[in-house]
Image (cartoon, rainbow, N blue to C red; front, side, top):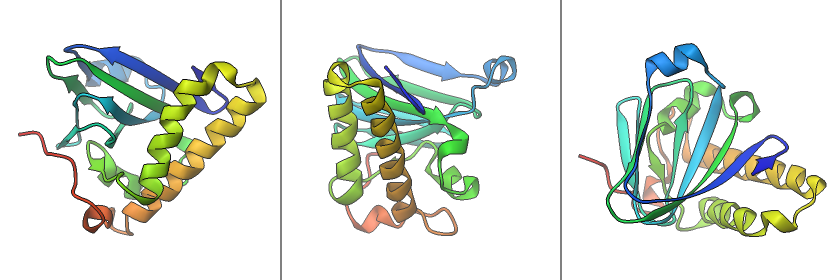
Length: 171
């Protein structure tokens, strides 16, 4: 579902593995960031030697310019993915780098608001006009930027870990 500055996608799937390899990146790199929200089931994300298992309500991040793998188990899963051009994220790249392949807590505060807006954007997309889609895109980007700034300090470390427990790490 296209938005003015990106796209929001709702995926329903059973067991799946998606890989973006160095070869795919060399052939075509759209330079997009992705925020993945697990709505139902579990979704794994692995990128830059970091990996996380997202549980329902969890958000993880990955970057099309770096190799990554996402996967689900055998149980059905639903995921909402917001993808947008890298240059639209108003968080310095060196700070965002620490969030690739990681799940950040979303049980309260801006993380919780972000997940609800992403879910409702999918639910209400058909009722939105082109102008609504532009506002929705800007709103999600603003929430995402504020959420990441709250979670990442100047060194790219997580400050949110004391807010709520992180998602499980894949072993």
